[in-house]
Image 1 (cartoon, helix red, strand yellow):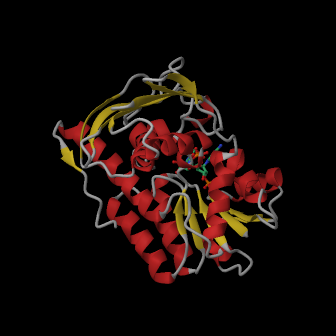
Image 2: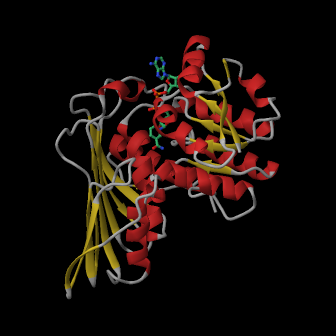
Amino acid sequence: MKWALIGASTIAAQYMVAAFRSLAEGGAIRVVSGSADRAARFAADHGIARSGTDLDEALSDPAVDAVYISSTNEKHFPQAMAAIAAGKHVLCEKPLAMRLEDAVAMVRAAEAAGLVFATNHHLRCAGSHRAIRGLIAAGRVGRVLSLRIHHAVHLPENLRGWRIASAEAGGGVVPDITVHDADLARFLLGEDPVSVVAQMGVSGMGQGVEDSAMSAWLMPSGAMVQAHESFTHPFAGTALEVHGTEGSVLARGVLTQRPLGEIELVTAAGRETVPFPDHDLYQQAVRQFADAVAGRGRPAATGWDGVKSLAVALAVREAARSGIRQQVSYGGAP
Ligand code: NDP
């Protein structure tokens, strides 16, 4: 599968170029950027044949099967719609769009065109989270009572640009990290949050956008989810806890882009360490995407998964802004 990269981004450089190359005969053959120089440098650094600033030119290349969109968030919608109109499959970064209706429009357009559309939610591709999901599904914790997601990190220096200073580009910790946590909660529990309450604030990095958020979500089963996201916590580490009537899962260091962390299951029988596979998260996502294009299964996170994670994030932000509990509206997502 041959890819065009839309966006000469850090995530593309750090993870996705290698992930595309990990498949036999796979790889990126074009990169499109807002700057010809940046695109050329990115192409040279990563062994990509062609670069430029013209999206239409890249999309009209018949050698391109699919596009990977990792521009800043406000660009995802127009770029994805152009790619779909050109008949390309789309792997789009989260958040899918700035507005829920735009995200829904992207997913519906891809469906209408018969194209695969996926969201790059990496956490559900991790062996750790798949193992935790397996424990829950196998009844090892009994009925789930609560899920606590501690995802307060220290944003690396090189990412302290639009993320902390530009509302127009979709900055803020809620569109950046809460979307991932929303997807993870849905993946682990197999249900969609009904309502949310929240607080958000600025604690050292945000300039016009929030850099920290805490929220509580109610699930249809009655389970409650507590989520904490931040850019400003240098020593906190990450953690995830699932508490049920028959057991608890205590995981540390698993909210990460790499196959790291530890999982412990605690039940009446005692404590046990839970092993998990250590495959690359992004390669897993790309493999499942390619399989879906070949008619084998679905992407790891579909377009509708991206719509739903955005819906939860938007509800969290609105709850924090207004001080009023929000019912989550999924925009008609199935
Ligand atoms: P970057 O800031 O690295 O890249 C975003 C855009 O900023 C690029 O497309 C590029 O524009 C421009 N840019 C990047 N570096 C420079 C630079 N040095 N000078 C000038 N412009 C620059 O963002 P990220 O890679 O962190 O994020 C991109 C997208 O991916 C976002 O939507 C984000 O939410 C998502 N993301 C997802 C992750 C995941 O795990 N799923 C992890 C990290 C990010 P141009 O292309 O026009 O050159």
